[in-house]
Length: 60
Image (cartoon, helix red, strand yellow):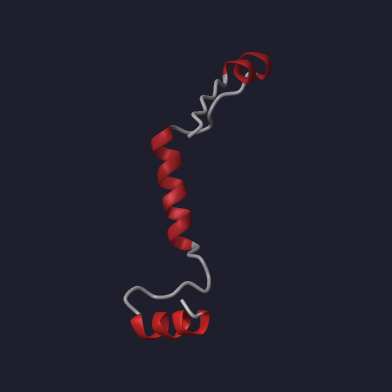
């Protein structure tokens, strides 16, 4: 496992970067967008008949 640590000090110092929204607001916006734009072609929850047919087709 590789651990990655990021430091944004350089971009903040050299370019004057600052966040346009708080972390909480960003998360709220992201969740709202995800709810409004669900992925296409995803099996419905608990639709075992379709899942079973797909698994049979894939021979899984």
